[in-house]
Length: 383
Image (cartoon, rainbow, N blue to C red; front, side, top):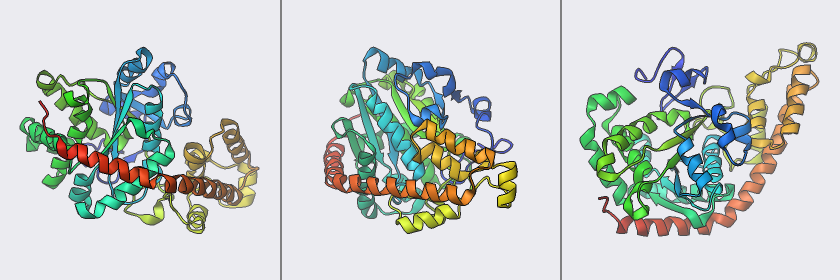
């Protein structure tokens, strides 16, 4: 990715990203640190306290809307290529969090079937059931169905019309500078995503308003493109530049950046068979020493350990219990085998409960998607 690669920093929304030092993104790409605005968040969250939500663009607009009781939107989506994994779970948790901050919020949840076709070759006819499953996942995580609009990109005429309008403002050289050399279909899908992000500001949805887009930081090229398009079309549509909150990339079980559905053995999905999940965890990268004797003497290195990251970011809510894991690791009291086994138990418990909730949400997910299809197909006007 020549357009986004600087030293050891690679940001690629469609492939492998490698970020050795997240603090460099503040200087390289103008992302702002969340740590400087923590006092503006009305409610804390595990991922906020622990630095998983590390960066943002213009997020104070949305937090100010929360504070003064005005309307705002939360917008993100899912590419229907498979079941939720920990990366998509992290985005979903952020959407649920920002929806929960005010009853003046509304979530726009795009099923990115256009991108799934352009990037993964998944036909629109194949993606519907995957989309139902994905929507059920986020409902099970806690999304409030009464304040959400779920739709497919391919059916939402306003999104496609916005993409057509935006195509007038971009050139091949501009897209190449942002994304590198790509099939033109991916350039088009990026314009469609810009349409998704700016959809909540159309008159039919209440007009211009602050919008927050929770995403992994590898999606920042889309945010930068959309913010530029919002400025270019502010006179015609009154667009406000959208905000974003970025989470760190969830590392694969082998410790590489990033967790990807393209490599099933590197991914922990939310519908894993418990035996398979345990096997994956027991083979995960740790920060342990070469032998138990060295571990007892020198202690482990949790900051290098995928297992510790999964405790911290996904499966251990209690800060006090997390601190016990860390202290026992660095002191040499905790060995990697027992640590992995405890994580496997937490994962099995979480996934069993998630599956139970998800099964109850399947009918509602299908209903929301069908209702969204009716709204999407009936629309079209964007001016």
